[in-house]
Length: 200
Length: 200
Image (cartoon, rainbow over all chains, first blue to last red; front, side, top):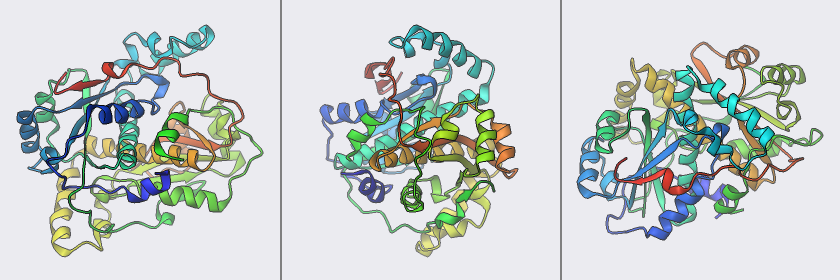
């Protein structure tokens, strides 16, 4: 499936076939592509938690206003990011780069994030949301549908997945076999209301 | 081009052919697909500023540590978002939905964002970064390359594009004809370091 088709066909689906199971090979194919998405300074601070345990799925559904896609979809991913990945052995993110590139980038990473707490947090959302679109479009290509979610109690889900204190949850994503089509797009803004030349 | 090829082939490119011009038809094709990406509650709060004016391009390059892709790429987009789009006539985001859907969603939007300033900001990064990956993959399909950027002085660029006080810049993106290949990927983390089952 080409990119345009995938973008046009992708809709946020709420009802999935609860019987369908994705294979481990499919999930590996999906995720191994997703992690080729870009991150600033290649810090790859995204962390993906796949929730398999039915009891945890039920708990997360309860923390998500009962939304049924949480338990019905084949795959439930909690998208997280490590706020401090930038300072955790950053050399590994550039280990195969030429020495002069490493010598430039490693101090630049420290300079960009040290004591810049809002920048650290913004970066988490930036990277994992870029990855989220890779998940959604890969799902299309693989014959699946998806739904990005932020309508849930982030603190409750953090406890359920034992989120480390220096990580944040950025969103959740479900992937599975669609059971009910999405409604037609309900209120697209025209391009000229969101796209401007040179300045606001 | 299919999704997998586009994801594998996409690299952050720093050197573009400064002579190449994208047509208005190409830019319309690109952006009209990008705005089909999802936003929470369909609030479509992203705003994209295409910087054409050469003087502004020069100023933004100076605010970006001199990075040459800012002036050499065919297209420079400043990705922004309106922090308060959720409260600006939200009915328009659901105008074609059934009345019961509107009756449920419009109060839910107000409830999700009112006085939740961090949620408003996080949502801006979430939505515009999802759109960013659509730009990067559409660029691949259209025979272009891209580079997402957050290495610049956000305040300076905000002044250059006359950013409204209730908007934020989330990143910049360049698109153009590649002149120099990216270096090989320099330090991919293996999947099992970023992908976990059930909990950390």
